[in-house]
Length: 324
Image 1: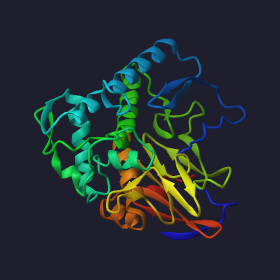
Image 2 (image 1 turned 45 degrees about the vertical axis):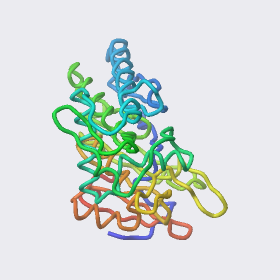
Image 3 (image 1 turned 90 degrees about the vertical axis):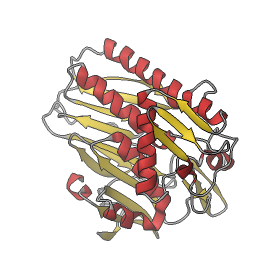
Image 4 (image 1 turned 30 degrees about the vertical axis):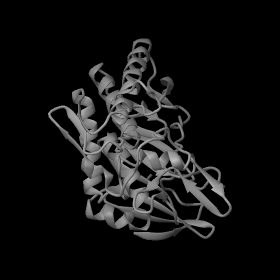
């Protein structure tokens, strides 16, 4: 599907800033907890009356543990120690191997549009902390995961899992809530969301999405999340302008530069937030080729392209049935 969008009446997905679900008049109020992690904020919406003190502490502990593993901003993290090491392999926990393996699967399936070795390029353009090593085309092929070890074939390779780690953390948060006996909740982690069960009103959880263009204000859509996760990649929240060009934090591995073009954002819906996170990055990096790649992989995604004063949408997979 490809259509021109009038900003005043189009309802669809947009950029990574996601509005809190609105509580209509007469709807049961929500209980909420939240905090900060991974350089962003998180919140959980639950039915009113839910005991939250223990949940707050457990989620904070979980996110602190994950930050110590996956953060490239910390010199003591597992990822930073791997990046500082020479060629060879390093023993890691099952969870680290699992996330790294998922990143390499998405790299392969996306023909390298998702590349977890572009950290030095991200830093070169002013967006990341991995200021050593060398990013080479197809660098992800020099990484491997086997028997709870991650390995690299040359010392200059670095591993940056930021394009997938937040989604993984979101999945872990959802698992923690389910294990604690909570079946109805909405989690927002820096604009990526995961929902289970129903809103207290009995309806599916609904979220509003901001317009993806930096110069625009307001929301451009509403999305129903029925036991799904959604991740959005775009240049509104994390980018800068020099002259007429918008420089995004998403690096195109093929050009070794921030993605450039009409694509303003892409949102991916899957059962797994980790998959949604990685594929949103890959499809944003693919630019104009993103919709074809999504169709070939049967990915539910919504692309928003700048088109004059409006936006042009391209929907793939089953995404349209989730638009409110």
